[in-house]
Amino acid sequence: MILTLIVCIIILTLLEAIFDGAEIGILSLNPEHIDSRSKISSIISKYLEDPQRLLSAALVGTNVSLVISSYIGAYLSEKIFYNSFISIIFLWPMAVIFGQILPKILYRHYPLFLTRKTILVVYVFNVVFYPIIVLMFYLSNVLQKSFTSKLKQSALSRDEIKMIVKSKYFKRNISDLEAEMIDQ
Image 1 (cartoon, helix red, strand yellow):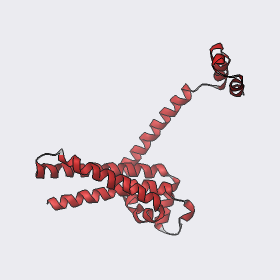
Image 2 (cartoon, helix red, strand yellow; image 1 turned 90 degrees about the vertical axis):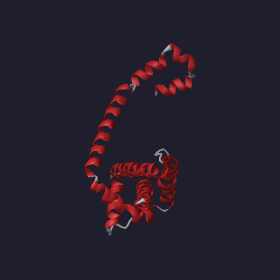
Image 3 (cartoon, helix red, strand yellow; image 1 turned 60 degrees about the vertical axis):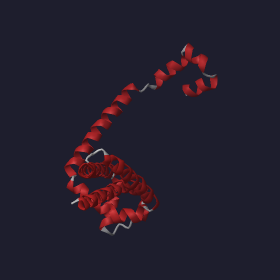
């Protein structure tokens, strides 16, 4: 039982590594190096065209892997050491080093090779968790639009900037050349 749970934690850490690595791998790929004839290449091309879908799938996949492995780790820690807090000492470094740092380094150096080997896992996960990913995609678009509209409302117009530059206080703090550059 304990060995099975340890193997599950290792598999979940490997999945986390695949999701975090695929994110870097896709973004590091040169589209010219992708052979468009294979099914794997067409999946990679779709993610290159719409990276937000990949990032959403990677985020959900990473979080699902982390939550489940944390739960299993806490359960194991409680059974073995009678304290679930001990799992943090073991799982946190394992998740950070083997689930995030190492995969990002490897996928950055070998993006095409590793992405070809693992993109199918991300794709299957994307299909299975499609409703959650679509919801995340929608929420991120809503948040993005609300922030960009607020930024546009708070941005100064060109005329307002010119008026500020021409004010007495501002003229004392900038050179004539700077004022002329702003005025243009």
